[in-house]
Image 1 (cartoon, rainbow, N blue to C red):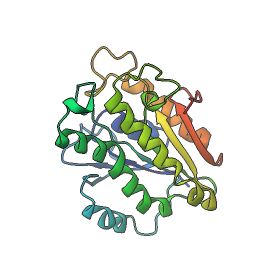
Image 2 (image 1 turned 120 degrees about the vertical axis):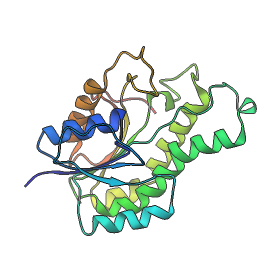
Image 3 (image 1 turned 180 degrees about the vertical axis):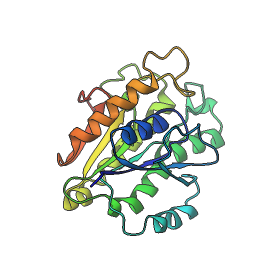
Image 4 (image 1 turned 30 degrees about the horizontal axis):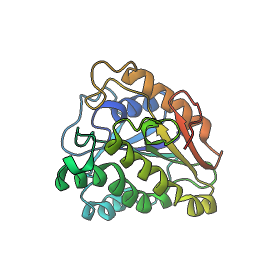
Length: 223
């Protein structure tokens, strides 16, 4: 039986790359997009629409999944947010959009999706960032963006009691500095390399349980 994966936010970049890699490894992949998606080269991938920031869609989206149990659900969401360093230079609207997209909406959706993760061997992962670590990002580079990922890590940790009770492994994933619309053209890691590495990490985490902060090469990161 094929392993089942659900990738939330797969219209482009890392999410799109990960869906392609898992499908090439004979996973049955369901992926979501908000409005448009890159050209899908793999017709075996099932595409569903979802705006992660529209919380009214969350329950309706889960109803489409019926009684499916996934070996891995990966919530991939991220925007850069305001380019300024200090919050007093950022508008309220920009700050709210950043935290809503990077932190609040992923966690609200996760609360609905956790029951759809396969017990004992399933993985629930979030695209986080090494920038969200107080110990790894000692200079507080990109502090506003980074703090949204720190908050995501903490809220992911709050899922651990329920995840542990169901034998589900939680992953906070750093995909690397990837050459995407968010990462920029000078980023040293390609989408293909990041996606392949993340797929390896997800496969190796099955049945591990607990909450782990890992980069795309499988290295453990400090919180």
